[in-house]
Image 1: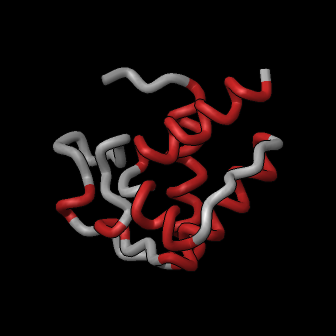
Image 2: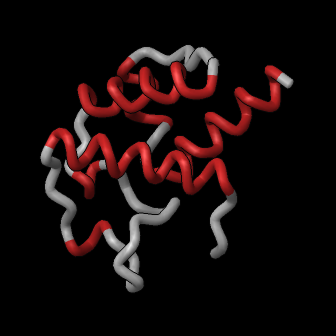
Length: 96
C-alpha cells in the first residue's frame, strides 16, 4: 500500500513518540518490509493510554484539530495507526 502524505506524517509522529518514550517495537508490530504501517496495532508498539494521550495532543497541535475522546473511548476506538489516520483525516475534512 502506498501511503499518502498525511499517513506518512502521522506514522513519523508515532515513531518519534515511540523513540522518545523508548517503547519497544516488537517483531510482530512491523510488516514484512520492516516498516510500521497503518495496520500496526498500537499495543504492539507498547503504546499505553498515557502514550496515546501524548500522541493525540501532538496531532491536535500539529493539525489544528480537536479530538473529542475520553481516554477510554480513544483506547477502544483507536486500535491501530490506520484508525488514528482516519480519525485525523475525518476531522480535517470537517474543518475544510
